[in-house]
Amino acid sequence: MHDREQRWAADMRAAQAGSSVAYVRLLTDVSTSFRQFAATDLRRFDLQSVDIEDVLQEILLAIHLKRHTWRPDHPFAPWLRAITRHKLVDFVRRRSRRGELPIDDFPDISPVQPVEPGLAVPLGQLLGDLPRRQREVIEELALSGTSVTDTASKLKMSRGAVYVAFHRALATLTARFERDRA
Image (tube, rainbow, N blue to C red; front, top):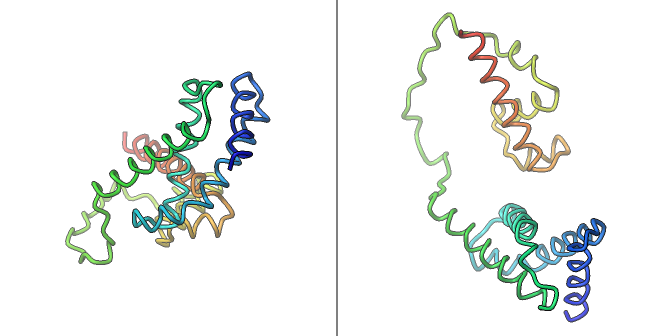
């Protein structure tokens, strides 16, 4: 542990001095270490394994945004532990506030609104205008009902890339719909 602390502190010092190589090495080491020790937090906070990646992304972002607050004459590990603890607690709080429930437990109680005849555009035509990756993501998530994790695996993308492609595709489709409607 002492060696890791010294290595991380040295990498952070170098990163603060402008070394991108040291910064990437630091973030990679922190990511690997967090994943190794995350099993305890999974059990303690009743998290799923996919949640760990979301928490990790928040931790890495916080490290990046707060890197200027670490003082080179102080130990690195306590600073990192504080960020990790806060981000984990924030994630658990947000999750409990959302009150996530499986959608399968609810009957279909909202009737589908009929589409105005002038607004009906063939789905194939709309999707055909999208870039290939965005179209594949929409087809998997929205049409097939595949989970983000399964879509990412099937399309050989990261979960984050699936989210980005999905949101970009929706923005494109919305803009197209608004333009055609006007």
